Figure: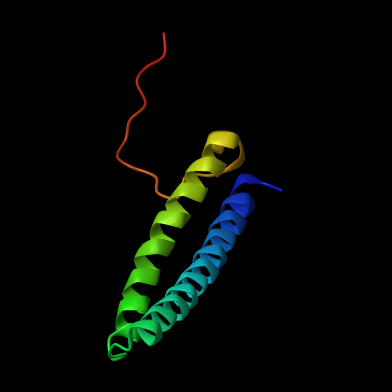
Length: 95
């Protein structure tokens, strides 16, 4: 496979991973907050908004950590094409 296909597959895989991680974090926080509020006999009106926002934030940090580990293990320039190319960039003359 060429670099463009590798880049496309990596971006698609990372997106699917991010969505799955977000859903898992939201569900985990929802269950955890439901359990805690039922034990404390507290109101449960805030559970879904807090679990939704907290799950998105938590999945962002998990996603960043996993992507950092993957990028450290592989040589990105060797396997992936750059997503954004500066067309105004001029290469310095080689001597």
